[in-house]
Image 1 (tube, one colour):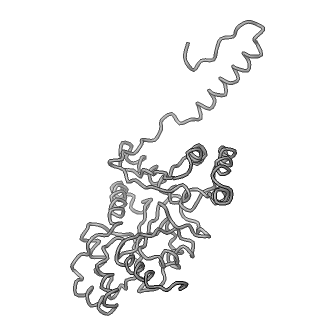
Image 2: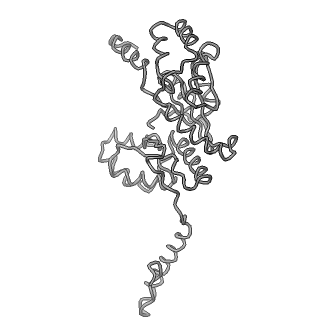
Image 3: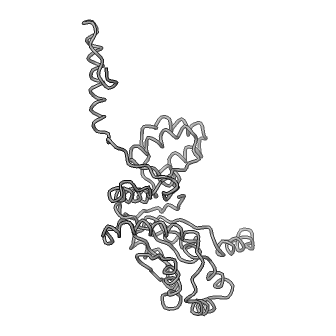
Length: 324
């Protein structure tokens, strides 16, 4: 007998039980037909672009966190167990991950055997008993999972095109130019950038991510889909186009990279512009830019790299008790 075949009927006295069991098998067969016959190809970690996302960024867990802080871990675990079949609401990183999955879908259509995909990893330090609810939630949305700053209001973003915005210095590029600003001021910085316009900047911590995005973009370009590409990248920098923008663009060119748009703000706030282009995530090394973007509804990530971090720590040490 086939493993998926319903059981044979027995004695007349067991008709009711048999009917109930037959109903169970019928229901199972119905849901088996709904399930996909072929699961999407799992990304190979050696070839994939791994994105790690915290559970509290992916899902809204404020209510549960409040129970933990006010009533302790036992009540927290109890609450999670009682609600483990109720999916969490989407959090700030949810649209970003959804867009990553949309890109994966398009890539699988064009390159069915390719392992160059986004591999999204859910990171959490929650109690193990919460795992069931997280898994149920992931199954509910059919996705899995950067610890990031969540805005109070989140602007609506595209769920079919992944948009990623990068700051320049100390993010895509090294902090060498920023060191000159901190040590000698803007006039010396402009003079230095003009003098070294044709000397590429060293790479920063997020250069590899832009490189990976560019590699995936070229897979769409190769199929004649440049205008329909589901990935769009932005350089959003406080540099001035006239006085220091050329070096940034020439550096990208020397790396064989480009961004779809390069926006030079000459020191203006980044938040209002980011509100217009609506990226899924914006990376910056300076917290006042991250906070400004977050206030305008952009999900932002702080990159703890470069001279700006040292100056921040130094200022904190000099600050007197009770200072602002």
